[in-house]
Length: 502
Ligand code: CA
Image (cartoon, rainbow, N blue to C red; front, side):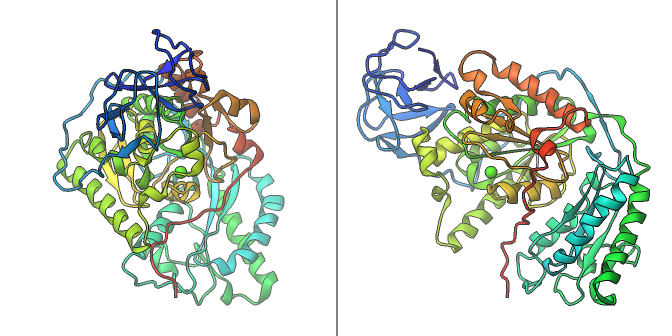
């Protein structure tokens, strides 16, 4: 039976299927016991206390000796200590030999004054408070029915509803995080620089916190309390939307260098195959994109924390490594204030699927960042200032990560999943990649790319990564619509708010 070993230094591997005791693996190794799908076996005799190495890093130390062909799981392993944040070595693993991309351009919508181009042409309507959403949603339905058909070059109208704004401690220490998130979210390149902000009139999140002085006017801001009743409100909303649609209608796609594209990577519902199929394929696609000048961001602080030293080694500057450490420390303290730590992250499903601990999960998660150097680290919702691979610190929660990456300017998100999710984001295309072929069989019309072919030997990481790269460029260029976009499966936007609500 075929086994998968990730790194040359690994002393464990994973059989591609569940296998009974006595099974002979490729290379002649015989299984000493029954091995569930996705679980690790020792490739040689390992002594008590010996390090178990997967992805080239130590997952932990053996609580008892395990012979070659024996099972290693969370019960036989003492987790390796958490990497220290102080004094991490940086710049010691800078790869310049990134693979060459098959194409260097895409067809996007340029945005004046912005680095990144849009991948869709959408009117995004931001709100300052949840109270206005009922009225806005009624108006939105009318806009889509009555206005949108008259603007054939506009793809959609999206209400950027969120639950921040009312009763929030607006001067709290961390309030700048949700405020920055919302401010940048409404400036995602898919909205073409058009501002339409709907407020109630008494909320803490006042329009001046989201707009600059030159933007703060009646052309861009509509306050419901200034209007005489529901019908006047909806008429005013329709009127403002129409003016914005007239401007957006003039946008056209242009062939642009990939440096105008920003792609987000995320995973959710991971299993033991995520780290050997879907995430490495995404990592290879990321390397192709970065090599061609694009910006790629990956996130999910709790899922990289145990591999932070590996990321620091890939930082091109000391200041970048220091910001990486600062973001990790901030999140350690944020979790500690809630009485938990990141070991709360792995789920029973993760463990059943063969992930022994958060370290192993983190190594699989990091694989989606490929091998490119890290040129910048962003606080939640910040916009990148450099091209290349960027770590954008966000929670791992799927829709919070998605919302904050949207704020950071992504035009496409690639979402790797083991267990499956119908996840989607209204403002951008989301390409879903599954880690196992049986997931694709189950959800053939929800999963876009089957990375399980890597486990079965039907494709290499490089082949699948190149295919995914082409899918990303095609989705960005509007030539392909992922399933979630075709069916309009859109999650709510959820801005990260670590600050108190009063
Ligand atoms: Ca996630």
